[in-house]
Image (cartoon, rainbow, N blue to C red; front, side, top):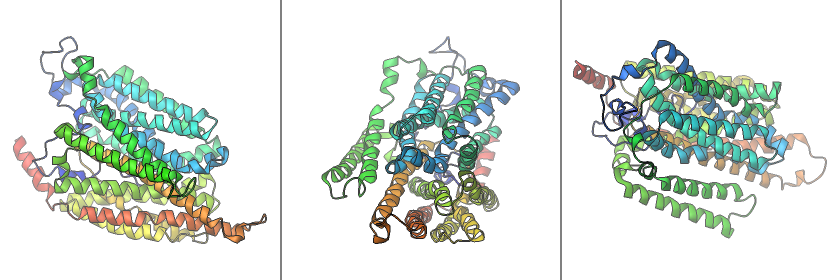
Length: 531
């Protein structure tokens, strides 16, 4: 499964950084402070500035720390994609088809809402303690998912894990900026990509060999390795901000952003989950939720304007052409990818009668082609110097590929759906990135928000299509034929798959405004400046 954050940061954001006038920091970027801001623990207000390299844990320490951080990136990415394979088993076990959308969106919702908060937590509090807290929250949520006995409790566990994921991702960016040589940092982003694309395969294996509960309990021993690595080998110095009074540091967290974000997205998700299924779209409750979503969203924008340059979404920044294009493209790209991340394994199990393990194996063409596309995109950027070429080419090919995936049916031969999967991941060619940290919060926020919304939209489409279809007279009796049922289910999944087509086209449209600048010129300018 190609991921919109295969390397944690969307490559289109590279285009933003071509403009030297962009200097604002977003809330997550605050956590990645200038390395000269770190002083001795016993001298909170003054002291000699350390050399950056002196804080590296040394060859042995780094060799043991980096795998721990990479494993943390791996399991949080796994948490996003592994649920796609396990949803049929969870639904059957709890008898809760109405909760299908929440299993994925609850995780992404809290990750979206708490991501800006953790960006500021890492700025104003001890990095290691904040990271360890995030890891424990994630592990606790995973444990709840693995042991709970009802669907609601599992959704709560997923939401708690999402909170931990937000802190782990923000923490990874901080830790690698402080404790890893530049050449080693892409390993963490690579681990995230591996975790995301291998989720269905690992999930299918665990379901077939052990139990679906181990798809969540699997995170516990892996997270323990990271916990030990951080405790033993990561001892950062305190920053000046971490030495401020507690009351002053708490005021910097801006909890209003989290409250408004959670309230707005929850109201929208509830409207999508209930509308047409639990109650009609015209009901006063659904209309009230939609109106409430709009009102709270406006309040969110007003609050961002009030905060100015310290806001999560600085208006001066996002009104720039390249910045807006990158954020919008990332938003729709994430939504398009998640369509197949969540529902392609579902299609294999429901329509092709594949086992969970087999459905994971059947997604390998999708996984493998994403890496090939990423490599091709990197070569294109290196040879041409322009990000626009792989961005536009990948979006065009992907639009065709996801359109072909819409034609899948119960009799589609293997060779055809394999080819469709490969074309559908061409958008991964736009996922190449360099070491860009400024503005990462905007990209991560847009991707998490997109995932939380579109997973619920797709679930609503699937359930409503099935609900309408089941009113057909051929499903009225006791002796229901299998073939009409498969046809109905396939038609419902096709309605979900078609969602990726307009979103892929919007990715292309959003990529068009990006400025055409040769990145090699920028690199030459930086080399001359260093000399």
